Image (tube, rainbow, N blue to C red):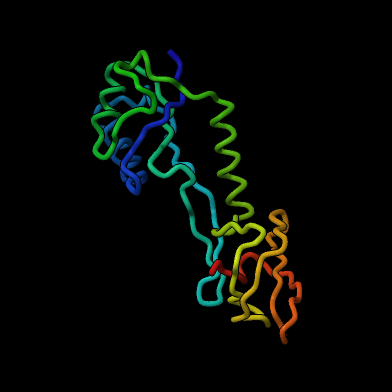
Length: 179
């Protein structure tokens, strides 16, 4: 039987711990041949902290990990018995009923993971009409309204009130925060 990808539900915030425990249990039970990679879908995000750009990782499916494995009674029980695992996604009562996810879907996620490490996303997403405060640059501490969002450039055009006049200013996502 070939290995397939399965989605495993974990306690949110314990994905890394579950991945480690699962890999450890696989070694202890000598079931390495039945298991492939374990993925935690994450992306890099950038934010401005005290005037400096800070890059961190954010899980884009908190509470879920992807496990490449051959599904049988032993492997099913091993995964389900791992601490902080609530089970496989899907309402399967036995290993034969657990739905696998397609390689194409996994490919899409891994592409999203690798692209995210090349060009990190801003931590906050903006929409037209959002009230924002400028936190960096010459317009620092000014308030304004988002007039236009340019996600491909990572910029927003904000109408800032300068001397009683609404003036459009183009700013980087990281130079503003929602109010």
